[in-house]
Length: 167
Ligand SMILES: [Zn+2]
Figure 1 (cartoon, helix red, strand yellow):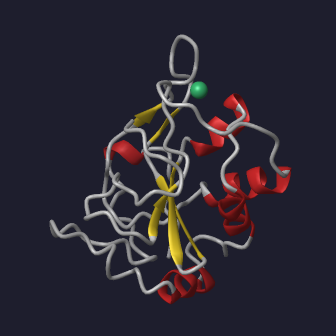
Figure 2 (spheres, protein in one colour):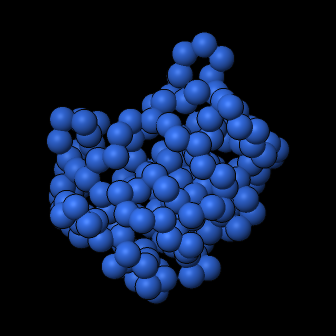
């Protein structure tokens, strides 16, 4: 996947880059990245949030880890949208693998944002997103429907692992 520097405006989305929609964890083998220990609670909360991450865009391609030595042992297709500090942080699903397998250390502000992120698809999560004032910016200019927390328009042949969340 395309490398992006941590804390730079995210260019992985089908919208123009925005200075409060921030990249975190868009790593590849050609660019150095921060490593080190992080609080286990951050990792556990990431895994929890990644079980059913809210996706404002229908499908943006599969990411494969390029840091694994020979073959990418992990793939991801979701992105995580984490509201905090009047921003929305955008991390690829692979961020959990980068932390677990490759000792990636995200920024402290992102770790704090993860710890304070409400459960996905909760009213609190919706409110936190809304409070950033950025939800309308995430409206896709090419007319794909937004996931309105209750529908799952991205569900299709490429999301076969997900069950129906029933709401
Ligand atoms: Zn890897």
